[in-house]
Length: 460
Image 1 (cartoon, rainbow, N blue to C red):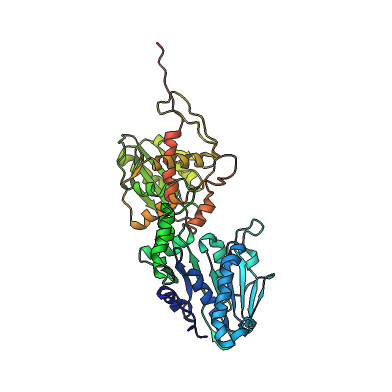
Image 2 (image 1 turned 90 degrees about the vertical axis):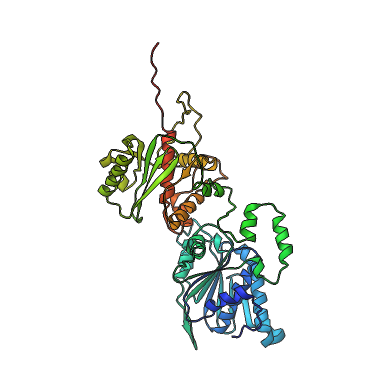
C-alpha cells in the first residue's frame, strides 16, 4: 500500500522508517509535547498497515474510550478517506465498516482495528479483557495515562505477524505528552542520556516540527497562560515537569538538593533501606544534620554484609547505634536484630511530634502511618531548602533519586480521612517497576527529628 497521499513531516517520516519496516521489531514512543503530529502519525500507520496486510489485526488503546471517540476516531476516519478515496472515489466509505457497539473497524480485505479502553478496573486488575486478542500491531494514544501492566499485557498479544502474501515483525507505537512513569523511565531518560534501551526508540516531536500550525501564534498562546508547568511540558516537551497537585515535592527544590547550603550540625546519622525479595540492592546514607554526605550501595542482601558495612561507617564517622535506623521489613528485621539498630516499621503508628526544645507537644496530624508522616516531613525539609545532598553518585543514580522523590504523591487527595502517600506498588508502577530505594532511605532521616524527646528536670 502506497502512502503517497499522506503528507507527513520530517519527524513523522523518521518514525515511519521504523513503523513501516517489516523487519524492525520493538516499541516506538513518539511526541512529548502538544501539536507535534502524534495522532496523525498513529492513524496513518495503523490504517495503512491494516490495508496493506489482509486479515491482520490491530488495536488502538486509550485510557478512556470517550476520549478516543472524541479525538482519535474522527482522525482515523479522515485517514481512511485520504488513503482510499483516490482508488474508490465516492465509494471510499464502502472500504470499511465501523461497528460502534463492538468498537471494531473492519476493512474489505478482512483486516480489523479494535478500539480498546485500557483504564485500570478493580473488576479486572490483570487486564484479562485483553487476553482474547491476537494482534499484529498496537498503538496506544495518550500513553502517559495508561499503566505499564496494560501496555505489557498488549505486548504479549502481538502474535499475528504473517498472513496471505505478507509477513512482518511485532511492533507498538506509543504517542504521549510529557509525564513521569514507564515512558519516562523506558524512553525519555535513555533518550536524554543518549543511551537507548534495546528495541525501544524515542522520537521527540514538538510544535516547531509541525509545519501545519502557526508556530508564533501557538507559542504566544501557551506563554500567555503563565503556567510554568504547562509551558515546559506542552511547549518544550520537558518530561521533568508534571502538573500534579498531589505531589509532595516541588521539582525545582528536588534539584536544589545538590547545591543547597544548610545550617551545619555535629550530629550524625545512618539510614538504611534493605533489599527485599525482587529488589537487587541495599542503600545506605550517612548524614551530618540534614546533609546526606555519603551514599553506599550493596548489590546483595546478605544480612552479615549489610551489618558489616554499617559498622564500618559507624566507626569511620563515630556514629552511635541509637542514631542508626534500618527498614525492618524482610531481611531488614534480621539486620536490626543482629546489629542492635533502631527498626523502621512503615505501617507503625505516627509519632507524637515535639517542639525542637522538647518542651511542648505539637498537635499530631492525621497520618495513616509512620511512613506517610516521615515523607511529609521530608517534603517540608526539601521544599524549604533545609536539606542537602553532597554524596558522590553517578548520573543514573542521581536521575533515579530525583524520579523517586518526584513520584511521591498524596494518595486519595480528594477524599476525607487520614493523610496517605501513594502505596509502594503504585509508585513502582510510575518508576517502571523499579523500587524507590533511595527515596525510602532518605525518608527515614525524618524519624530522628520526629522521635520523642526526653527532658530531664533537675529539682530546685
